[in-house]
Length: 324
Image 1 (spheres, helix red, strand yellow):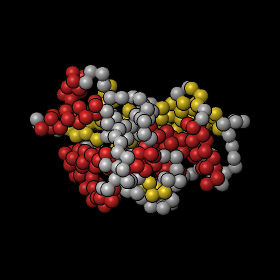
Image 2 (cartoon, helix red, strand yellow; image 1 turned 180 degrees about the horizontal axis):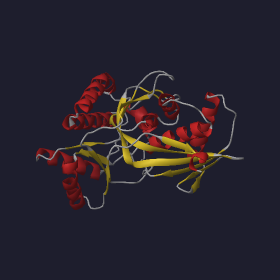
Image 3 (tube, helix red, strand yellow; image 1 turned 90 degrees about the horizontal axis):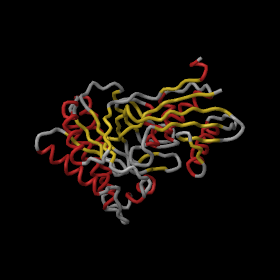
Image 4 (cartoon, helix red, strand yellow; image 1 turned 180 degrees about the vertical axis):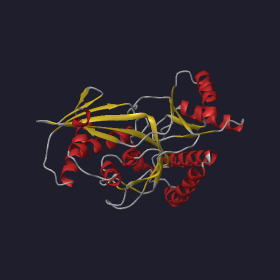
């Protein structure tokens, strides 16, 4: 018996950067994301005599395997299912630990495969809650297009779709400047950021920024979406720089690309940047400007890897019998 699921990663345009409850992975703010088509995780679960985890065809041990099986057995207890042992095979089409939220697709796929394997008839809302227990950002990867993850309690903190099939001229260019694992994990980064004197301001501004982003999406206003995403990313990274133990995910190439985007926009080329917890920059632009930007990046940052992404779908799962 086996089950497979595919989930796509997402990029938060309005970000969460701090947990109200680390154990339940409850956020201190709402967040709003764009699901991406090019980055995804495909995970297959089988029942077997002992737990084994393979990532990209290599067996994993230690902390990464422990996180996976702690999560699966937590789901068993939560759903009052008997304890089983699993063979987990994941193919991750996301650069791991480089600020591209690889855990969002990984745990959304794992939650969906688990539900499929155990024949659970769950709504997407219920599946979003289960995914959240593995990774906060995974709650949004249950949905395609634009999705919002809401604060709340264990039973009320989940993602809701904003527009799963946007008809918007928007592309996101993922510019991979550095594929090395980040030195400061997101969990530690969030904890340290809360020591910033501006952290309360970050919390206070969230409802307004969420509302403005939803209005911009509904209106199909690309420039407003870009401005809000760039502002929110700058606010998040300002918290890191002003923490009691200041830190940054930026590398020299990150700063260079931020300045290039600002210069291009000043010259009339509509583009905006956003960043998560990592050195890589994501550029929001339109289809007509995408080619020009990619040409300039190839000239000015020849070592950077550029991936053109569009809106991605929500999670999909199936059992082995579906494929027979």
